Image 1 (cartoon, rainbow, N blue to C red):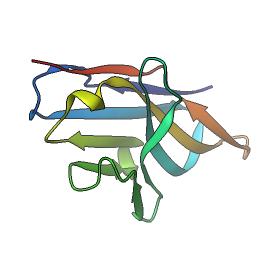
Image 2 (tube, helix red, strand yellow):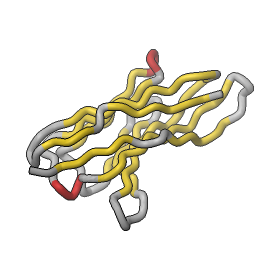
Image 3 (cartoon, rainbow, N blue to C red):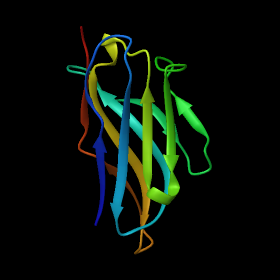
Length: 120
């Protein structure tokens, strides 16, 4: 069984910073792409940032220059450093990953999400 668990969300003032973590655990053989998505109330889930195993990254235009995605392959963990936060960044942030289990089957996994609220 494979799980993704997010942590690090919370309430922050505009202009502040948060660091999200996503830890993958279970019967993992390999992890390819890891990413962060977000969903605000009344809106569709959208991609925030992705990082492939080799380190290539991809960001939504709305977060470029403010957010940084990284990963620690030894820990099966991805991070999202969020700086200069804006009220419009308020959303539930979900971790997503393409994982090969020890049964050698690739599958896409989602975490349960962590709330980020940017408000004064």
